[in-house]
Image 1 (cartoon, rainbow, N blue to C red):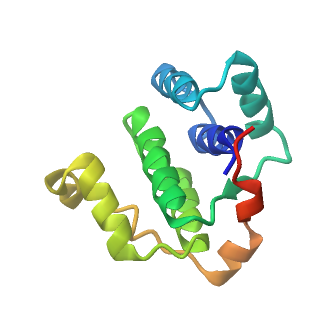
Image 2 (tube, helix red, strand yellow):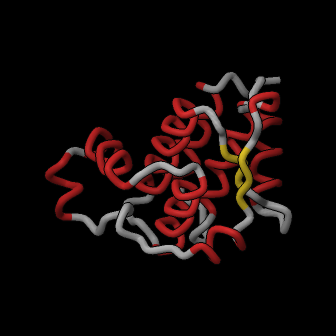
Image 3 (cartoon, rainbow, N blue to C red):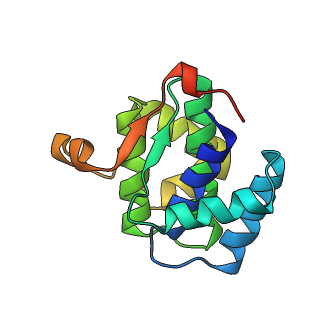
Length: 149
């Protein structure tokens, strides 16, 4: 998956609840740098995420899928609250990548700890239908698209 596509996905998630907080922006800027991207790339990602054409592009490689879901969880938690729209978007992305509930629970436990995950509303329990999956603007990238630019 291209690094810019990864960043775009994170910005889409951060803006899914209708706002970008300072903490979300700081996390996105840090992640942008970690991905080896610059200010222009961040501008492109923001522009894309706020456009009517915004759609998550999901990796097909399992390790990249887990990395994407981990980053999405970090972005969701950055503002201190998990909105329903963020949980739904996460659940749709996980379902589209065919990541099972047990693996999601393990991922959440690894990121936030089992005691916190047990007392918080579970992302993995968010219900979705086949219609939700097919109607959501999420696409998988193929392996030939997975090279960074």
